[in-house]
Length: 166
Image (cartoon, rainbow, N blue to C red; front, side, top):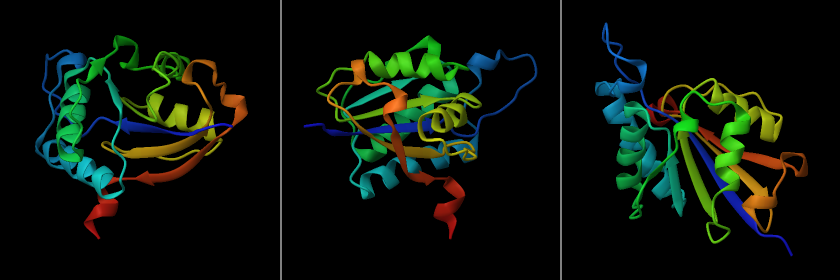
């Protein structure tokens, strides 16, 4: 008997591009500071409370993870993984496989093109993921550690901040 698990892929919210600042250190801009908690509230409304959140180490991603997690009611510690900074799909899969099987819902907060690439790699669906977008992927497996993408995953939802403006 397999268990349905949920993978949430969130792209960091909108950030500033100051001259001379290292890419890794860029903070969120006003829109990003507004969108990240709005997306967290959306997760709460959808009944999607992550058991685990793993974020890129970049300032803009970790800030996004913190704001979204507070808004959705997540009370755990946000883990960070340097390999989620500008990742390949393989990096994201490795991070996912390292999560405990007790976690029914895992959220990864990362960057493009990695976010779009992992959604495509897992579901076969190519979706644009603007800043702060969240993809909800359902996976039928007993264990994150042994799951392989060829076993299939279903893109259930993709939310973009602009969709909330209507």
